[in-house]
Image (cartoon, rainbow, N blue to C red):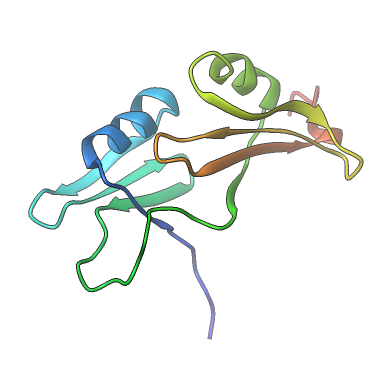
Length: 126
C-alpha cells in the first residue's frame, strides 16, 4: 500500500472569508466549490487544501487545530516581506538551529501556518 498525498480539510465558520484569505493573501486558486455542502477545494503549486463548514455529525466545541500547517517554500524571505503586513504574525522570520529559515502567521480562522526553507537553499538560484 502506498500513500499518495495529504489534503487537509480545514473547518471554518465563514467559507467565503476563508476562500478569500487563501486566494487573495496566499495566492491559492479555487479548484471547486459546492455551496450546498459548504465546501471548497484550493491549490497553490503542489499544495492542495479543502475548506468546509463543520459536519453536523462532528462532535466539536470550537473550530481549531492543535498543531500547525508547515509549508516548505522557496524564497522564504520574499514571502515574509509580502505577508508580514497583510496577516497576523505568530512569529517573525528567523534562522533556527535546525538550519531552517522560517516564520509563522495565523489564517483568518486562527490556524497557524508556518513557512520554511532550508538555510542551504537560501541564495541558490537553481
